[in-house]
Image (cartoon, rainbow, N blue to C red; front, top):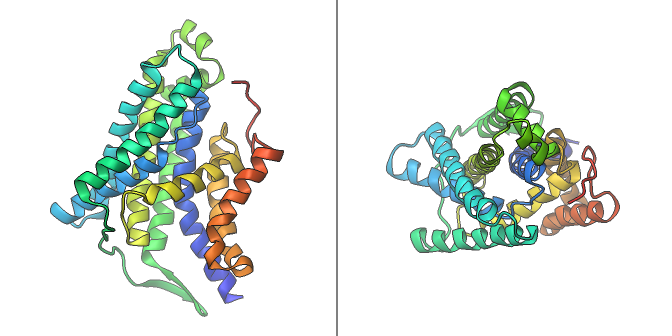
Length: 290
């Protein structure tokens, strides 16, 4: 029983990362009907930005998170200007391929600047926060979960309670009609891509500290699993993406007892294939025509 409870806590921690990345996929897809396959690379670049801060500026996790968000925001903005704005009017597959190209480009840039070897992040909030029998919860796990909840709650408020959120939801329903109603569609798409990039960058910093590892390919598995989370919850649903992220984290950590830790990465891919085949709109998503 204590092992199950420990894995449940680990699943909530890992699910916080998946949820942040899944919501990045969801808000971009919701507005543009485009999957940003550079999300994993933005996760990686955000981690390197945080590493630069704690290595050369200050060992302050909040400054590192700010640097990760700034890196993700900036690169997301650049991707939108190239993959969306410059390719407007071209087949949508061109923009999709362009995001894949950016993913490869960012990995190569990271390899050139920081090298291919794995770097480590210093520990933050070490020590056990509390114990429940044999189950231990460390302070950093609580910090990760709390940080993710604050950010995800803030995004919910932004999207559903503010004017820019109303503009985002209007464009997601019909960008042509939104433009006729006076919504600045270009501004909304740029903001959405940058916001999604910031979420990925923050997740990169949190994940690099949690796993104590940073390398140019760290975003490949994280990005794919988070895409699975978004599909699981619904690519067109922000709440669904959050639910999908936490669900995958819990399912994956509990599943290692059944199939073994060596096969844990298979779980996310099985969920992705299963939902794409039998319920592509996810749990809370809606069917869309592209």
